Image (cartoon, rainbow, N blue to C red; front, side, top):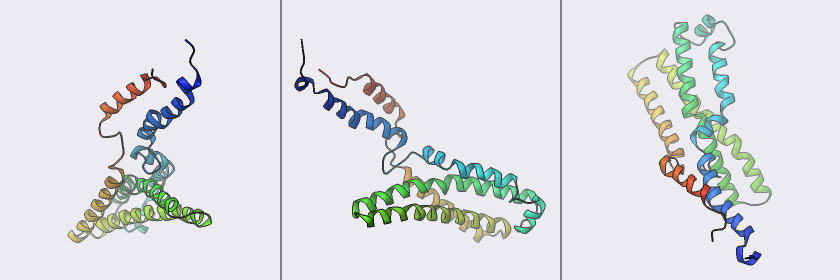
Length: 201
C-alpha cells in the first residue's frame, strides 16, 4: 500500500516529536529558558571553582604566615580553614544563583520591551546578575571572617541568618526544576518516548 504525504504528514510528525517528547527530554536534562539544573549551574562556574583552590593553596599570592597576619587571623591553620569554608559556601550558595536569576531577568525584559531598548536592558541583565551573586558571596566572606576574628553570639547569629537566607534563595530558585523529583518516572518516560514511533498508525 502506498501512502501519500497527506496520509502520513511525516514533516508534521517530526515537528510534533521535536516539540513534544524530545523537547521534554532535553529540558529535563539541561533545563529550559527559565531554569537550569543545579549541577549545570555549578559546571558553568567551574573557572571560579578552580580559582578557589588556587586562591586557598597560594595563600592570596603570598607567604601563608604573612597572609594570615595581614588578614587578621591568629594562625595559618585558622586562616586556611576559614578560606576553605568560605569558598565552599560561596560555591554552593552564591555562584549558582547567577544562572537562574539571569535567565528570569532576560525573560522578563524580552516579554516587556522591544527594539533597541530590549537589547540595552538585556545587556544590563548579565552584570546585574553577577553583581547580586558577588553580593551574596561578600555576605558569606564578611560574616564568616567577623565570626572567626571577633567571635560572639551576635556574630554567630548574623552568620546563621545569612546562611539561612542564602540557602532558602537557592532552594527557591531550583525547587521547581521539572523531572528531578521522581527519577524513576523520568526514566520510564525516556524509555516510552524513545520506543514510540514518530508517526503512529
